Image (cartoon, rainbow, N blue to C red; front, side, top):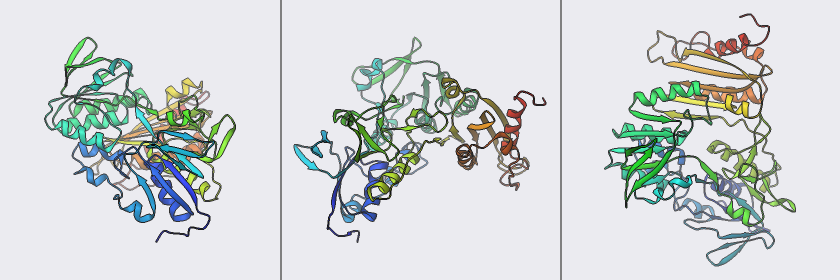
Length: 457
């Protein structure tokens, strides 16, 4: 049903079967005229990585629920999907990829190799012990889930988005859970310390022991992990999960002569075409966690590890492959996470990022409620707004509900370079089951206004 004819059909090879790779494959198959082969080192196809922590916590009843497509979906579409298959090398001059001793010709190539877990040198030996895991794939999630069945003590290394979600999952299973984070605050890439304190307080309230500003010295054991050394103390551990960030998977591209940027990601232009010493290659595209993109606020290179960014990049690549020239511009990178009973969201830059780029900011913080105070189910809502030269450049929201919607709106506001004065004059709706009479966003903007020179205190 998807065949558009074989006349002048070109060969498209996609390396990577994640959010970018399979989205490009299925969309191009529907709208273009390509013979498509996808090589993926993963044994599974088309599943939600973001849902894995919630299966481990028991909120989703099984890993099968995360499968978005069955394996036979792709061959029925006419896509040659080769799982559990690693591409050994690329030859851009000969337009070939080398796989299992065979060369495969391409007219167009998409590199979507994603990222790999970061493990510090002092932990590499301990990371080889049984019951020490990283979490990137569905198989990783299944192994972690099985290991927790007979565990009592769990140590999670890394307080980013995945780390805190796994900590919640372990605590919900009744396990003694320690979360250790190198930074002095959790989610330090996403939110400021004053907002992170709210998250830490909530984690501790549900039984997670949080250690910030510390790095593990070693992971200890013989065949199986037994403890983790932190600050001179050996903490017992039946399971250790390392979630200390991810690094772009770029070796395949780099070995082929594709240039790597200052972030460690693959350099691409606005059409997501890769760069070699000869310039940008019109037939080779890259997207997802391995690609270097541009920050809308700072103008500097950055990486985005969001599924939503990956899907947008897949759409741009698809359009360019089917001769609909499309650009991928700078991003504000909106993120949201569900951490226990809290929703946490952020967009734009944080105070720390502003200082790194010498951007002067003023901030306003407001504490309100998600519904009218008298309405059942109301929870506290925390909003922090950052302005530079009276223009909105960052926003952080924490609450029991309504966070994603606010971050989505503030994402558009940042892209539109909305001013403090415009936010103060913004009209907001009200109904007791959904909001306060005056949205806390207004109070946060008023708080920032009071810090500006010449304003009335």
